[in-house]
Length: 124
Image (cartoon, rainbow, N blue to C red; front, side):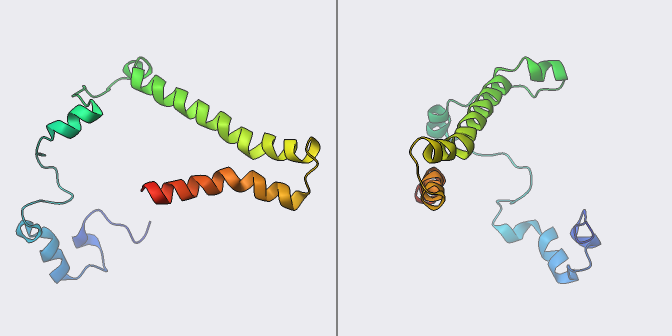
């Protein structure tokens, strides 16, 4: 809270030379990183992602009638259900039904999460 400011001029750790560099718009090759600019269209990626312009949701009623919100909520609910299976049911099943020791159960119950980390690292 104390280190974050609204602008570089208000930050005591930002030198005047850094403030001039940040304020200078020609130092980033015209890309204007971090500023609102007009993006170039990418028809191949837009077609691949099936993106389209949609109006901004301005009221609470529009939010609750949005199919995108329903889709996100459904996906979140499924993710929570699957996570609960991995976290609670699998360890209990391995110990009570299969008779695994706690150490072996801990290793096998963590396998999905180890696989998820490896998959995230390999896929980017």
